[in-house]
Length: 242
Image 1 (cartoon, rainbow, N blue to C red):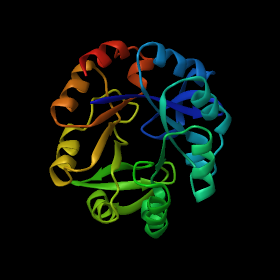
Image 2 (cartoon, rainbow, N blue to C red):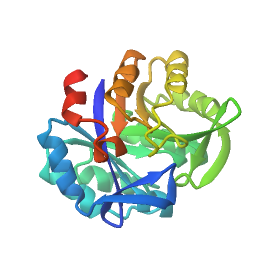
Image 3 (tube, rainbow, N blue to C red):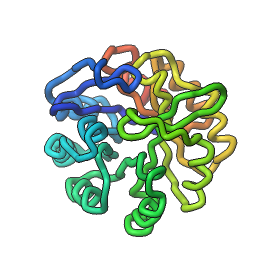
């Protein structure tokens, strides 16, 4: 299983939100590059970067920080937040980003997503769905976790798989930034229904046991953010275990 340390950038600084709430953020560093360099030193090969300002406002806002990470480390970076058009994707790829993360467009304009997949290939595009549960149904939030789409994860995945997406990040908002543990049942259900998807677990990781449970459940990758900042998880230990 691949390990993706996570850096969320807001106003040029490394922060973590609690349950996706922009009013409940904790700053961990004012230098995202230093955090990335440290992850690389510890043995990381991949990095997950979110431009939180971009996710909230709909326009890429932290391109300098992202470009600096790409140019000054050897990490394979996937990045998202505020991506709305082809030019945004080309700018990020030109800055050294390996994969582009997009979410809202899959619901609001699936034809545009299909075109992006045709232009850039499904190796370049990662679909990210941030979900909350209403009863037993996982629904998708969009626009930086601020708007309820009222579309179920299952309905959207049917359409996405029909246009051959390959990579999926699924974040349970109720667990994101909480250190409550991953939503293992949800991930098992996604893998059961869509075994060919490359699935990233995201949100809630609190221990190396959480990571091992995800690996045993067949997850392809896990994104770890707050647990690293809070030293609940040792990156080196996780990399050695996986």
